[in-house]
Amino acid sequence: MVLGWLLKGNNLSLESDQVINLHESGYEYISPLLDVESRLMTGRKDLVDLEKGIDTLISSLLTNISIDTNTNTISHISVYFKELSSGAWIGIDENEKFSPASLLKIPLMMAYYMMSETNPSYLDSKIKFAPSEGMTLLEQNIVPSITLVKGNTYSLQDLIRRMIIYSDNEAFALLLNYMKTQDQKKAYIDLGLQFPGENDSNDFMSVKEYASFFRVLYNASYLNKEMSSKALKLLTEVTFDKGLVAGVPKGIKVAHKFGERGYAFNNIKQLHDCGIVYYPKKPYLLCVMTRGNNLDNLEEAIAKVSKFVYQTVSR
Image 1 (cartoon, rainbow, N blue to C red):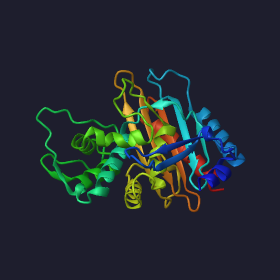
Image 2 (cartoon, rainbow, N blue to C red):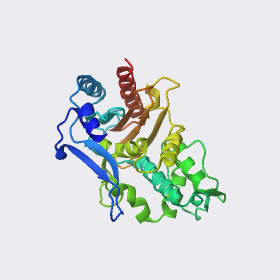
Image 3 (cartoon, helix red, strand yellow):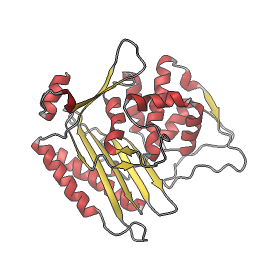
Image 4 (cartoon, one colour):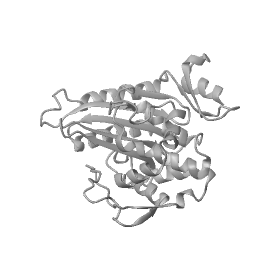
């Protein structure tokens, strides 16, 4: 199966240094294969043309004016695209580092679903939302439409739904504090990624690195089939519809998660959207990370990239 992927998807030779093999940790006698990713982008003409088209679009969207000014500018856009049927991928500045922000809610969800595989009743456990007096609640520029009620008790499953569907930072904080750090770390270690907070930089994850979470969910190679399906179904219910979703026709399912980050001291903002577009018979993974000083502009830029990719793939 891997051999066929290498030959058909990317026209690579079989030298081992041309692919990255990610294995699940924690086993003494086995090393389960989680993900296979070619080090090199595809040379297939249709995807090379897609890459050139995205690059041209990005050039038209970027502005060279300093983002420290009050003008609406976009300073950076990175893109990762993967054709899930073949494994072939392309990227535009795919190794540029960004702050993943709310995108980190997906690996936390995966950590909880991993726990529930061995303990089915685990997600029925309950947490009371009781912020202390004077506690500063987590602010969001893109505010969830449904929020937690002080004093109410919620199951872990309900908190996961709120964290993913509405991107609720308070649900995220409760879940983050409830689980041991070592259990949260496992997915990052297995996928060869840096765990949040392990260095001083806020910008520590690239669009290509983050896409690995979606790849292993789609392949059901990290969580079991039931939990992988459950996670992706939940991601199709995300209410944010101004990024990837805005670029595809209604009726096309998109399992995705957005993340946004703002810096009050310098007016720099980041907005990302990453997910699987279930185009019939040819699903693809698209991740777009952006940096600028106006969220509306960043939302529009992601939507334009998404629309261009969809129109090209669907021809």
